[in-house]
Length: 99
Image 1: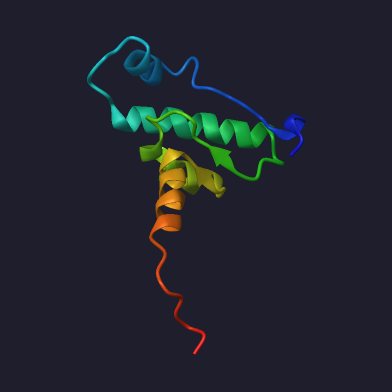
Image 2: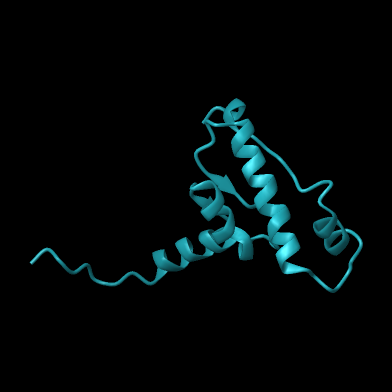
């Protein structure tokens, strides 16, 4: 993969995210955080129409993956998809359906 094809953005300037993550505020407004995450993701996809998948790198973002996917129509990856992939590779079941 060509590193020049990777686009990175962040949640800098997103008040809810910054207050909860950087200022250690304990009362998360889930709807507001979701709106921020979806807004950043859709802006990224609008600016870079060639983006074909998104990686939510922060461990606080998997709860918003569904909303991001619904808004962008793209495959969404995060640490939960990684854990699911590793788990499924360790607990394989016999394949059914060839007979």
